[in-house]
Image 1: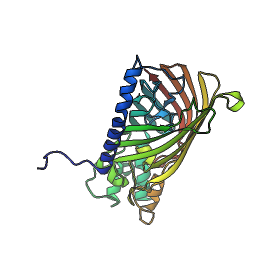
Image 2 (image 1 turned 90 degrees about the horizontal axis):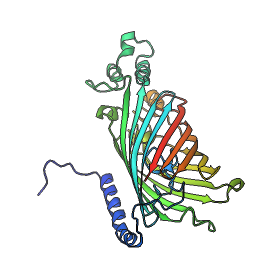
Image 3 (image 1 turned 135 degrees about the horizontal axis):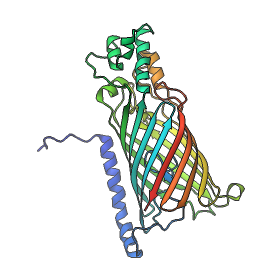
Image 4 (image 1 turned 135 degrees about the vertical axis):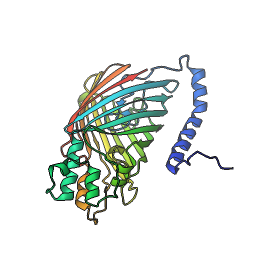
Length: 363
């Protein structure tokens, strides 16, 4: 008998549920052993800095990349947890991200992040740029001030009656639920061996953009991203200082990490993309480093053969994310990160660079 009033779960959602169930099921014997072998199940037995900081997607890592490390400072017999808040201030936009994670026995990480991407006054500017495209720069002042959806309707680029979107102070919001599993390796204890610490991860995104905006962009509001991460630490690295290197392989169709939805009018468009991070511990409390993360180049709004191609190309332009950061670990319960970030072009706005600040607490 069919249950009434409940919507069917998508295949992507089912995959995430199954993966989380399998991971948690595999932890049952580990948890039982840990409970027997440790007098303190909740603890911080790992070395300072090995929990990393928190990426904007909620996973343990750098500022923009997840790493193979597991969040918190729990050993293989302990459970650790973190909470974080990050703010990114760009030339035209700003983003707030916050969330929490749990590290289970230095093996499994469960995380949650909430992201809010504010357009500020740029929302009105985007409306004006769409207006210029629709009217060829010959619009009146009243027409230029109209919401983008009204402009597109008048130019017969969308169906009539589309609700207004954009305008000033517009925000794009999404939730990210992440699952990471350490497969093998240990960044501290494998010093005499080439093997890095390797983890796999999956992120489930739910974007809250209005349905009319998703339809205009031609994207899906929900998506799943995957990654493989390898992290290696050399205690006696560059100039005799502890040195970290991380390489990721991302499998994703997330536009601007999902803030502009997933895929495009031509399909879901999964891409296999690289990401990398490096860091040097100037002392046991301070890390200086840099990161790079490639982004998928999905065509939004319309295909390149459409009459909307010029507008579509401008909106679709995406750049790799880059940063240079310094992280401070005064003690295990707290870390502070500051970075200069360069996110390139976002929604027609070029040179989106600025300041990144983040705080992570561990307990």
